[in-house]
Amino acid sequence: MIQRMKLSRSLRNIGEQIEDSVENATHDGSSFLRNVGWLSAGITALALGVVVGREIRQRYKFNRRTPYDVYAHSGDQAQDVEFGVGI
Image (cartoon, rainbow, N blue to C red; front, side, top):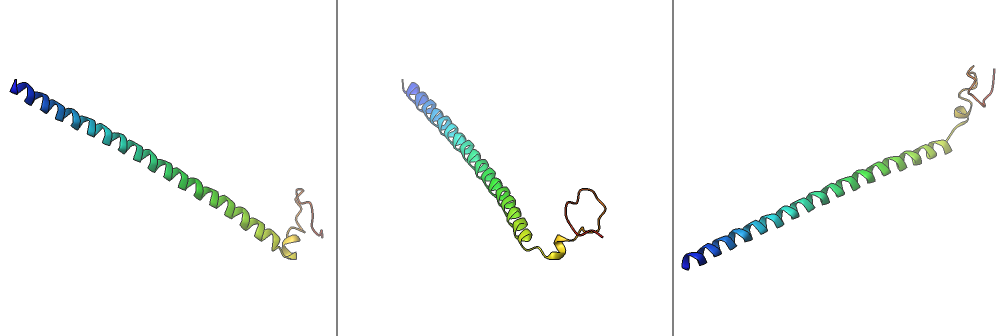
């Protein structure tokens, strides 16, 4: 009878250790997914910043054109030029 009690205690301890390790494994998996989520959110924010920054820069440069920029292709023989001063 005493041996049964010792065996049941040791089996209960082993069962608790297995449950603890399973719980820790699930927490590790969730932290991994959480880190992947944060990484993808960071990359998305970076890509959005690059696109928005490029658009703002293009608009800034477009609004600061000089007359030389407007007539830069005035002597070109290409057909796709729609404006300019011809020679």
